[in-house]
Image 1 (cartoon, one colour):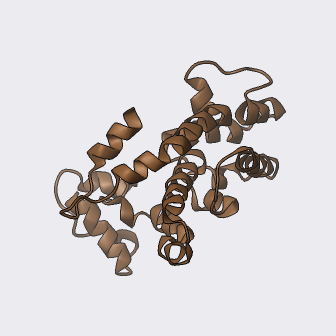
Image 2 (cartoon, one colour):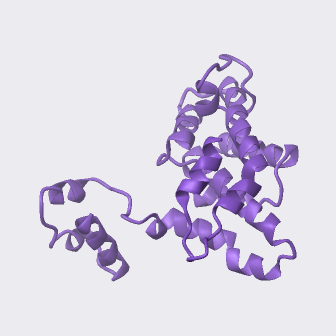
Length: 211
């Protein structure tokens, strides 16, 4: 962890190339020289910083007349951005959603369909997270065709997915999860509030998600 954090700080200070790794020590030094790893703290990841910039939560908070709805929207947007695209490119094309329904689902489908036709799937959908990764692999495959696209967008064509594959490879399954999340967002927002000592609890949030 210390070595990985040292690499991040070095990049932030303008270092690059082999100089980033000159002072690494310990058993994982060689591994970090040849493999890319996530930052120790997610807040330092480029995607995380980009998504927060796009969300512009503080500015939206200042302008919002319905703070509870805004919190619900923020939860939902980060879920959609991460679970479906996982990239700043996807989030940028989709924008900040103010609701969740058939209109938003249609927009997501149109974005993915357009990227497929323009052969931009590798830049639109991330390879770093398990949910987007499998959908990306299917659509970016050189043998992908209209059947593949319809499978991802609507779970129609050949083959028709069943079981967990519906959630891994199609928007139909992902939308079911996001539908459920939208319904419980008010409870999530409530569970995430700080207590009288100013502390928040992921345990309370987890209990809502498991219910």
